[in-house]
Length: 174
Image (cartoon, rainbow, N blue to C red; front, side, top):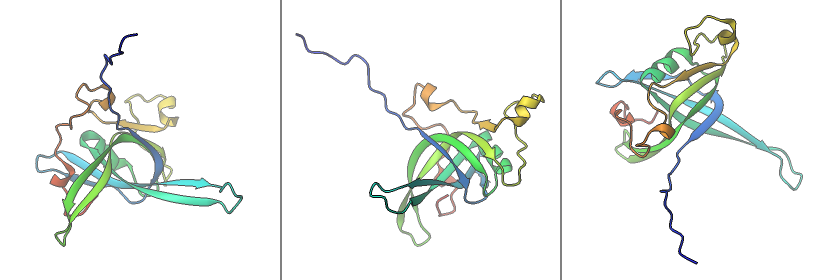
């Protein structure tokens, strides 16, 4: 019996999918080169009953979300605190310096897809297409980034040609 060689390279995966509620209104800003960047928070809930029959437990997780370019503009115009949304993207950790000069680290979810599931005000004006048929008005509102999906990108390990979030930070995390 011969030794088996791995002929295919093993790819890595950095994919995040969340459904949650916005914890604050989006903060839309622009880099010095006029690229839109939008940051906001999402809260997700998890509840479970302990196996010993104790009281039901619940935990809330808070996630920092960042959108770039056209998707950032859409998020900044469409989303509001309390909205329930679906986001899809990748985890990214970056270092930054606090106002007191201390080095800090934050993990963010850089999104490339967003769907507005339910608006607090009950109005969602964005539709992913320009059609005016009734099906597109009743479907969830979806927005996609103009950048390629990472899963389809041959250079999935490389960062996109966008400035880092620290280029637009005001010495605080998003």
